[in-house]
Each structure stands twice: as C-alpha cells, then as structure tokens.
Length: 214
Image (cartoon, rainbow, N blue to C red; front, side, top):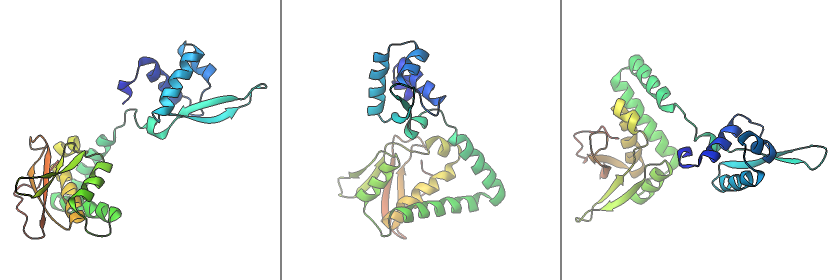
C-alpha cells in the first residue's frame, strides 16, 4: 500500500516509524523540509486512511504540542517476512513428523479455524463471508445447472502454497468443515488456474482427484 502514496507521505510515515513516541507538526516539517501547512494536509489524508493517529501531547512551556504516530495498520504496511518464517517452519515440521502427518496437521488447523468461526454448519454465502474477511476475494457462483460453487480470486497462501502444496489442505478442510461436507476442487491457481473453484458435496460423495489447492 505504501507504494501507492506520494513520496512526501512515504517519507512522513518512515519518519514516524523511527520515532515510536510520535512527532509534532514542527518536527515533521523540519525533518522533511516542507511547510507546516503541507504537513497538516498530509497528516489529514493519512489519518483518514487509518495510517496515522493523534498520540499524546507534549508540554512545551507554551501551548502543548500534538504528537502524531503510526497506527498498527500502518506498521503492517512496511515489509514483513512472515512467508519466510512460515516456509522454514513447514520444512522443519515436515522433517520432524513426515509428510502424511503434516497434511493431517494442516487439515486439523483448517477444522480449528472453522470451529473458531462457526459452531454450526453454514451455507456457501456465509463461507464466502468468512473467506473474504481473511482476504480471499471470494464469491458464490451459480452454474447453469443451479449448482453453487465458491470461486476465490485471491489465494492468501499462494506463494507459500506454491512452495508447499500441503498448505492447501488447510483451505479444503476449512471450507469443508464450515459447510459440513467434502470439497470438490475443480480449478486451482497453484496448478495454473485463473481462480480457485470449490464445490461442497455431502460427506462421502466428493470427487476430488487432486486435493492440492491454492
């Protein structure tokens, strides 16, 4: 997201990143060599976007100075290496317990995530709501036969799943547990598809020759 901001706004956020207690308008103006008016305008825009918030005030002997600092959301926009950590962990777990046990672990995690979200079986539209909250950009698609499919336009684990396809067992288990059935996976982005397509089947009737999803 930071790449979509102007240079001055990026520099402003970077300055606040290095000053965790916050900075005043005067300090930001001096640090970035721009006017106080420009700083006020940039701060207003960044506050609106949820990237900056007003922190404490600092006594100066005159009028207290308002300090501005980054929101937690803004901090998450800076580079992170979660995938690197996850990849190393998956490799290590696979070495410790073996591939079959790792796949079972992923399915167990999917079931746990489902239990954390719903106590009862839900329909496709509710499953899609949960998926979208996690960033999948999913929707319910009705085929000409009237059957419903869940179509995901984004795989939140795509790069990780490309390196470790077993991760996709989690997706299938999550959807299946929420919907109370097995999952037929007809198209997969990891396998070269444009989207991921999932169809819920009553337990025991799913036809899924390749369960590695993405």
